[in-house]
Amino acid sequence: MDEARLVEQLRRMRPDEAYKREAVRLAKASTKSVPAMARELGIGNSTLYRWIAKYPGGAEDTPQVPARRKPVPGKMSARKPPVVREPDELDRLRKENLFLRDENDILRRAALAFARTTYPLPE
Image 1: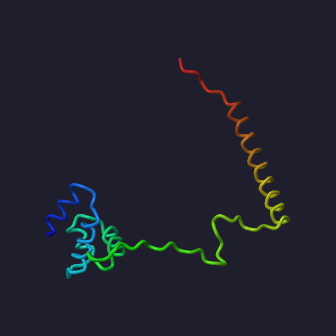
Image 2: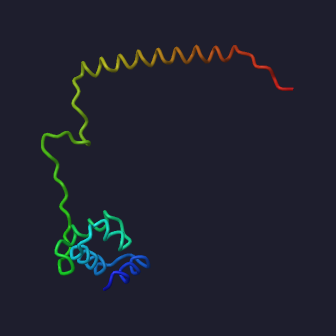
Image 3: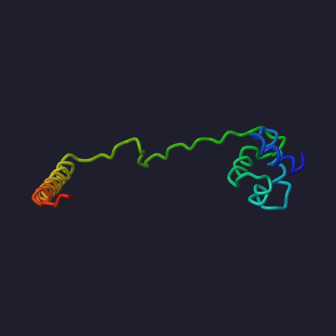
């Protein structure tokens, strides 16, 4: 497959396995950089890098599935809530309650001030 045919195939349809392997082979055989080859083939840099990672041997290699990262022990997971001692939680809630009461009072006073204001009616 020549490069012009590869570019045409990519524009017409979704690339198949043979196209991807050939693109990887061309990228590895070329003296050009991967971004330059990706530009010539009409694909994104990250796409070509992903194909190179999937087919490290090029056209004759079988695809490799990337391994998932394992969680690191000792690091906090997003699924577990942080451990909070009850007195700290109670203090935090009291402060939040006081703040919300003050905020509610300010809003109530502002609503009363707007209610007292008279606006001229359009004629």
